[in-house]
Image (cartoon, rainbow, N blue to C red; front, side, top):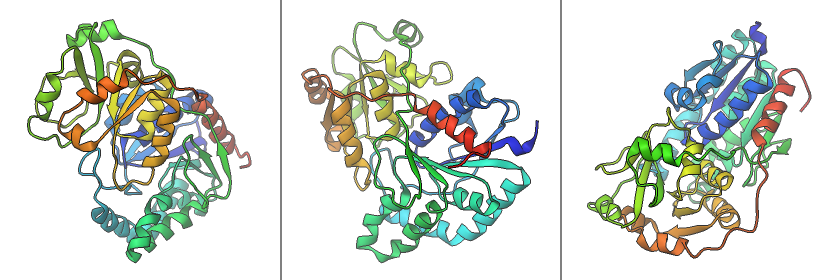
Length: 370
């Protein structure tokens, strides 16, 4: 096995959604080109990928802890800290040249045949300098996310310019559903939905967790949330409901039905519950669409992708919006009652995008043209 057959896959540490969709493609990539080692680089951590990918990780695959973008700094799953984000992004920009040179050396030393990035810019610039294909994957770009902040504060200019310059060096953008305007990329190909339906395992989950299978099962899809005092107890007093969480989560209190993702795939959890409560994020919106699950979604301030995803939610899902103050207060009763009267969506989305993306990445790694 030759090292020059390897693919380097860089994943943003901004949120689990980038990691979830990257794992969809990584699984498909293992099937499309089983002979190629894959080197995953991300700030999300090794355990996340090993849990998500399982046996799809080959013996020659590696996972390296490193971050090449900042995303948005978030005190919890809903709120963002714009000032802290700017400080961290500008610090990254100050190190960009050194990081690009370091990653170029890594790519050349390991004989990487192609770079995929979702969606940091530095790996794309490093690939260009190394003379290998640079492929971006995403539905938005960080220059687009940060551009509105620049209108209010000129200190954002180096950040916007950094990502525009890096993205312009990509050979190809594989653009996911629910896209934003991404003019920095020279060549764009759209692909279908990545997520695929899970397998319902309700009886098994009932046995594992002690949940009553005849109640309404509600998945609270958040890693962290700054609940108000008494909010969790107020929510859990709702009659006829079971509330589920998937590890890891950082909340006070107990009484939730906790699911270990190493034992039950997240898609299977989605297929087994009745309702999902979450923020509008690419990963959870895609998973809900693939599994035809209704979504109660909260506000997401200072994140430009929010209205784009809300449009997708309203077109493709039974849905109800819950004001963030009601969510933080554990006041879900009204939203759950409203959801029961919502009509089924009239639009659907084709899936299979992970296989499409994997085939295209494999083509470019073999020397095909963008």
